[in-house]
Amino acid sequence: MGSKNKLKRFKENDTFTNVFQPTRDALVSGNYELKAQWHSKFFKNNNPIVLELGCGKGEYSVALAKKYPNKNFIGVDIKGARFWRGAKTALEENLPNVAFLRTQIELIDHAFAKNEVDEIWITFPDPQIKYKRTKHRLTNAEFLNRYKHILKPDGVVNLKTDSEFMHGYTLGLLHGAGHEVLYANHNVYKQEGSPEEVTSIQTFYESQYLKQNKPITFVRFKIN
Image (cartoon, rainbow, N blue to C red):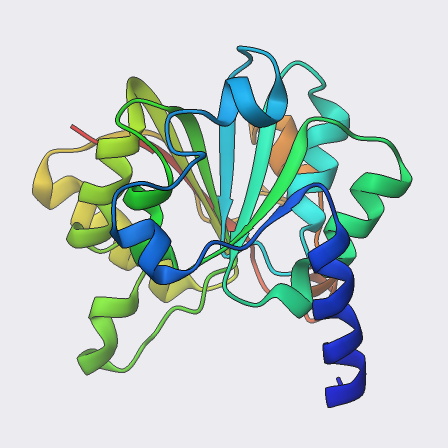
């Protein structure tokens, strides 16, 4: 994407009513205005809040919002030029139950209050295979602690990935730490019983992976 195009998207994001771009300072100060207020100030209802972390173009957030009008969805990513597409689509299609938050995922517990979130989706994250980069893996113990803080006690996390490494790493970590694996599948399109929302929604990159015959894996779990 050219820098002109990026700039145009950043400017448009500033005008979108469904895009929030707090500064790092605003989040870390603990006074972020939407923290604990997402229901009342933006969605104007008490429906469950579902996050998509590392949402990319926002395809999953938008598709889930269409599928489940009685839930609220928030796509989270640091790359605003990417989720511009999802935000624009949501406005064009009058989807009041989807928003986008531009921030780093390590600040997620500064953007949401304790027990404010019902469910988390992590779709096709960078597996960070190099050993020294485990601290950036979105299912490492540190991130799980942040998710646990903002999730309701019965809240669940969904991991959908084309990386068998990430799938195995996450399962090993969950079993080792005594978390509750609700469902795990090494190849959601080949094995029966996959949750419908896992196979009926595909991102652009996912369709590319499927053309290459890459298996898509899925884990649903609770953090104990």
